[in-house]
Image (cartoon, rainbow, N blue to C red; front, side):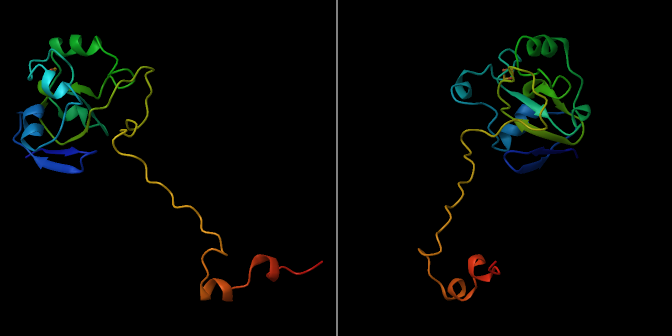
Length: 155
Ligand code: FES
């Protein structure tokens, strides 16, 4: 049974060979669409390209062949620039082997070929804690340790 790994969602499912990627993703609760596209997509008819995914790490070869309709639809958008071999419409993709899927890759206006899409704005980067001044946080370990100013030999 082929395994489909949804990288951003950190979820892996097993599907029957030849299964439709969009159908299986939706069954597993994976969100393929952003914002209003959740309601305004074409329901899997290959018309809107809102279900675009990237099949990463050379797993695109494990998907069924791309049809002429999908090639034309994909060529009309900017999604595939720099990712021509790995960019697929989930609703038109058959799972024939293990896949590593990046959902909602976003627009790729300039054809960057980064290893992974940029982080989503909904997933903010962790905020570093501000450094606490030594005088503001007294501790016995900190006060017992010699500071670099006192440990340095005087000239
Ligand atoms: S759902 Fe519209 S192209 Fe896939």
